[in-house]
Length: 163
Ligand code: SF4
Ligand code: SF4
Image (cartoon, rainbow, N blue to C red; front, side, top):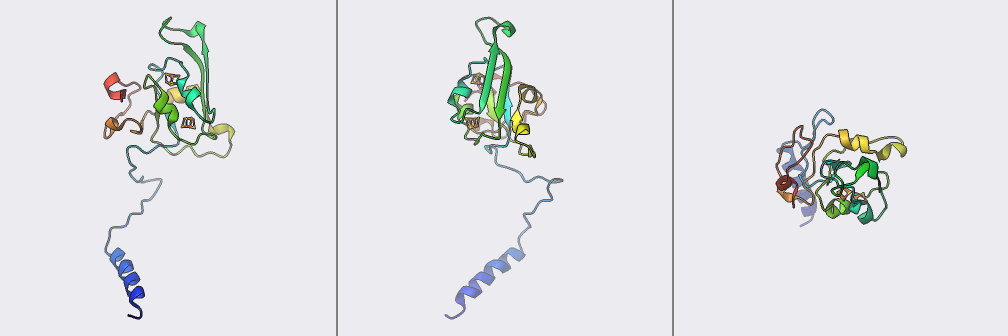
C-alpha cells in the first residue's frame, strides 16, 4: 500500500509520546550504569598489592609504570615497597587486561567517568591519587561484586575481592 512505510514510521514516533522520558539532567542527575561498566579510572588497593608488576607486564600498551624500593619493604619476602605506581590513562584503552592479570585482586576498573581534562599530562594517575581516590570498583572481571555497596571502605576482604 502506498504510504504504508510513512504510517509505520509515524506510529513509532507516536508510541514515544506516551513513554517516560529517558533524559537526565546531568550533572545534577546521573544515569545509572551497568555494574560491569569500565569507567575512566582505576581502583587500587595498596594493602593487597605486592608490587609484583604483573599488571604492568600484561598491559599491551605499557601504560602502567611501577617502581619498587627494597627499603620500603614493610614485610620482607611478602611484598615490595612501592615508590611509583602510575597509570597513563591518556594511552589506556580500558581493555582490563591488567585487572584480569593481577594475582592478588589489588587492581580493579573503576566506575567513575568524570576525570575529563584539558591536558595529556593530567591524564596521568599517580600513586597518591590512586591511594586517595574514592573506591567504587566496577564488577568487570568480578561479577560477584554486582550490587555490593562499598561506601567509604578503603580495603576489601579476600572473599569480596576474589574471583
Ligand atoms: S586497561 Fe588495558 S591498556 Fe589500560 S592499563 Fe590496563 S592493560 Fe593497559
Ligand atoms: S599485578 Fe596486582 S599485586 Fe601485582 S603490582 Fe599490579 S596491582 Fe599490584
